[in-house]
Length: 222
Image 1 (tube, rainbow, N blue to C red):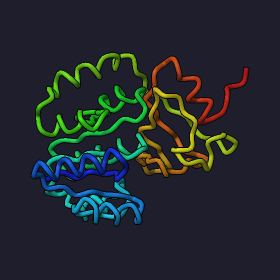
Image 2 (tube, rainbow, N blue to C red):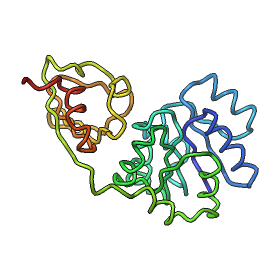
Image 3 (cartoon, rainbow, N blue to C red):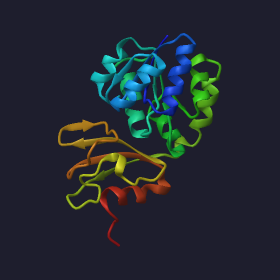
């Protein structure tokens, strides 16, 4: 079984180590060169240095022949993009995403990630098949029917202009799905910059809809 793990933090490093010990073929993708080189020495697994949201980096890691892609970076938006890309572009059989913000669990499931996961032990259990995926998914899928897709037009005076997605103070139960810029649709990552004129689509709970709109476009006039 070939597994690509994106993110060389504590969770990713521990997971790569345990998967290697279990005899799986593991490739790790890490953005920071110094950390990636250290993990290559310590874990004795192939490490690709680069941004896991970049399809060229994924291809270099062998995504065209991968069985499972596990996204465990510290940025939920990036984890979502990595999994969507793995499934749609590289036809990965399974995608697992670490959710750092519990409010994003049901959003990820709704957007097509095969499994949203938490602790390293649970990730490993899902890979090995010792955890019931259907039962776990059912628990996290509760409440999805309450979600709402909204669109926000970004004016030149909007507070989000020129900010990266990762720097936006969005509420927990919200994730940006698509940015339409001119004739181009962009799947936003953590480093994607919001520009004036963008049309932003967000999946959110109705209870925080006004807050999301205020963060992106500013408060509505009373």
